[in-house]
Length: 96
Image (cartoon, rainbow, N blue to C red; front, top):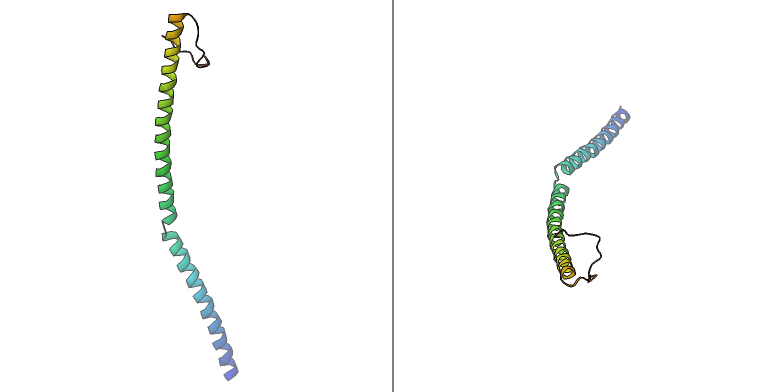
């Protein structure tokens, strides 16, 4: 009878050990689902990208304006002197 009791105690110990492992896995999984750090990092990255895009848009506007001013100067010089300055290549024509 004591051998039967020992076997049952051993089996109970193994079952308790497996139950503890399963409980830990469930708890770890719950912590991973409730951890929103990756979502916060993604939100910060999106905000940074939006800021960078705005900065690049401003730079594009400045360069476009500069290009337009140079084209206008080139066109007015051509109209005054009759010869082209060739400051810029005439890929983009400006209508006056």
